[in-house]
Image (cartoon, rainbow, N blue to C red):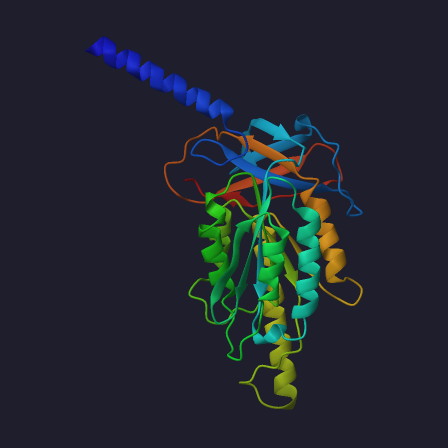
Amino acid sequence: MKATISRRSLLLAALARAAAQEATFSTSVDVVTLLATVRNRTGGIVNDLNQDDFVLEEDGRPQTIHYFSRESNLPLTLGLLVDTSRSQLHVLEPERKASYAFLDRMLREGDQAFVASFDINVQMLQGLTNSRELLSAAMDRLQIPKRVSTLLFDAIHQTSDDPMRKQKGRKAFILLSDGVDVGSNTTLGAAIEFAERADTLIYSIWYHGNFKPWWVLGGPALVASQAMYRAKGKAAMQQLARETGGRFFEVTADHSIESIYAEIEEELRNQYSFGYTPDHQATDQQFREIKLTTKRPGLIVQTRAGYYPR
């Protein structure tokens, strides 16, 4: 009996080792994965680095990179999260047009995307698909309700859990909003944690309209209120992008949503993929801080701040 148990244990161990060796860029208990974009001092993307050009640390401890690729042919899952609250009344149409053009250019065979809106509710208008026709039809259904609410953080929470957490490969949210959450049960910090647990980057596009809060009356108070809410929304959008490894954009007269989408497309086509096994096993679910740098001076690495052990 002891010999049988021993042989069975050895067989299971061998299978486990084989499975670990085959795991490439999909987060598991043992393998931590991350995506990174590298830029030079002028903001240009650098895509000619090798594995030996990077230095990786977890909680201040040097780590060995086991998996590396600068190819971006891994499957891509995109989630388009569109703010359809009253504040977006005058910007929804350009968002709709530019978003469809972006997905039409971006999706390749094996890639998939979904479209969700958030206002007084979070609505999945189209689940994961590679069909341009279905995605276009979903965006045609984007509409703004008469009631005031913006469940931004709830939208990130819900779509991180399903469908993003179940997907493999590269994953990113495209978030279009003024960043002002009204009515969510989820906090900003929790929304970031849900996205991090789903290994999903957030590219936040700050697109604010001229909506005037109905609960503020008159003159200087209205101007001060608008400034306060815009600053709060911008800060939230910046934090969502920064801590998940994505990037923040602001739509202005000189920086159109079309040009922003072109920049996101360039990033997604020039990412580095990494995988490593931490040199110490997690005994709790506390956040692990990741620091990724390059040996080449003057380069800036954009990646997520860390991860939560599973």
